Image (cartoon, rainbow over all chains, first blue to last red; front, side):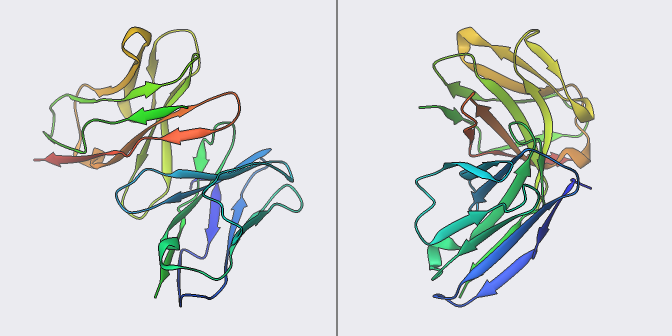
Length: 110
Length: 112
């Protein structure tokens, strides 16, 4: 049990569609991070929340990406008008300098 | 800018042999350093972390790592590898600004 639940585990969609992922920490954590991991690479930082405030965003996070953490607990990551290059594993981490990660959502763009 | 280099893409060791995975970082101040392990299709599990103090840190599953400022290194070690240690290992560096950077990982294969 990683302490972080991510849904769905897998998402297959057609190019141009919108997708939304959800991250649910089992216990309260002030900090929540989103990372993207492509095959054979390390995770890349996307964005970070302190409670409900989104404090940092990577340049990787184009305007097609949006993340929210409305009540400072769960978080959602939405990708609009998906592209082939969005295919990756999307990881959610919580804790100081993220110490607990979920198993990720694997996105495949057809 | 911070960066992390893991020079070895893939390492193969025999079960029971010792292991050392290399990690070099680039950072202007004293970094926060981490090692994570990732099994196929799974998320990341934190093995150990270094913030300050004793430069030899102990982690879970019998792993340890040593911070060497002069070499900008934070190598991960284990005296005797078990077959269940086969996985991908990531070194990461963090700063006080909450940015967090991962290396490209080292894939470990354990042979009987």
